[in-house]
Image 1 (cartoon, rainbow, N blue to C red):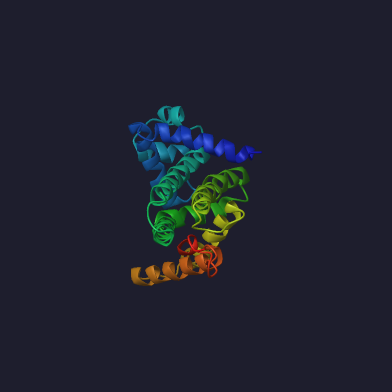
Image 2: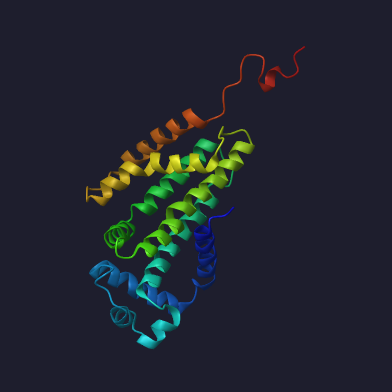
Length: 230
């Protein structure tokens, strides 16, 4: 059975994708982003956003009924981009190790952006006061990204490229293996690592993942080359 909260977020994300190209909506969200980054979530009012976006308060309420809705829309937009990128990079046309490296690097580049980290800090700080919003963002971000990865792992397992029993659990493990240390480091204001160091980190993590979930090696006499032997 589908989780109702996840279904609501998926439906909301679809609706957002349809309206992302609305110029007025983008204008409002650009203003909201600037206000949230400069004043924080709790320090931003609807009037602040209207002023920053250059629209009337009445126009603002046509698109968003609260600052919570605007914050969620900003997060959903960024998460939607990442999930689409995962699907594009995980098309199953290259070696699984190559595609996993591309996916891993894209996730790191996206989730360690200054604006994304600032949004995470804001939500951590405001989560106790706005628990429903925090849960919605968790469903739209980490949960949906894990589900997108699970789809890819299921595809690769069906081809024999991975050996996974529970694709969703393995996807969650991959995300933690990849991001836990880097995200913690970035959230606590440590300086970013050089690109070469991140590339090496990705290679090590993907190699570790495949050592656990890559296909079992064929025993002598069981590989494809042995199939025609008497």
